[in-house]
Length: 316
Image (cartoon, rainbow, N blue to C red):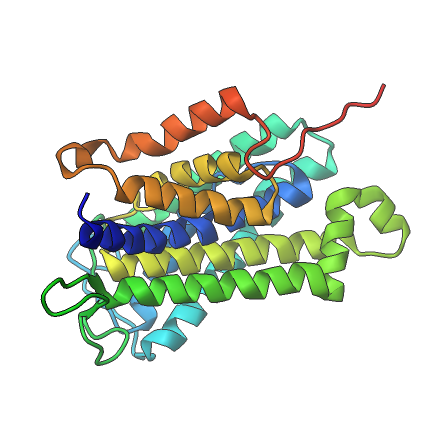
């Protein structure tokens, strides 16, 4: 492969993988605390993109009960991104209160919580479709300001053009990972979250309000999901209410690849998956979706605990 093309695909893979990483971090946070997969995360990913689109002044199409509607305000895109992600975090909390807490209070089997989260995802997706229809929505070309459409990392003779929005996505994703890593490892909140993840009962006996930190976990998870949804939507488009399903499935592949409940593993897994997809030959581009599940299958066979995960020890 020509070095110019290789480097361009490498940068594209990092951009794609960074989105997978922050999306998978939302899965990872919930799994590390409760040991369950929140299948509503993909729907919240979609909802975050719609929130930001609406807050930034976007108008809806001709279907749904909000046909042709738009908000009377138009926030700058960066502020709309933050507010949309915040609202997605609140939806994550609502999902936890309605779909997880009642079952947790009864000591229900984890499989029931998984089914409950699937039900929450279906409700959210259908609610979006009922409200705004299934049209494709795009953010304006100048959403990030008056920036050049692409940046050349090569020379004039051998250009390596990478879309500026992809560079922004990678930078935002890297910043989120750094902030989250600092929060988890170097703050009192992070230490409390680690304690709840290790043993919620013991943490409660030590004076930690476990319910409060579970709510915080779902808020952070929803925030990250909404943020990822907007980043993807600004790069391509919001492809309807089922926009997040593919990313939800890939997110599962990422967390298994990196190691269930492992935050660095989610980052590594996301980047690896993005790079793997970027280097799929153009003749086989239609099979990119199979990459995540091929890697997932191989990892389950070779190293079930994931790249950075640890084997569980069963005490008898």
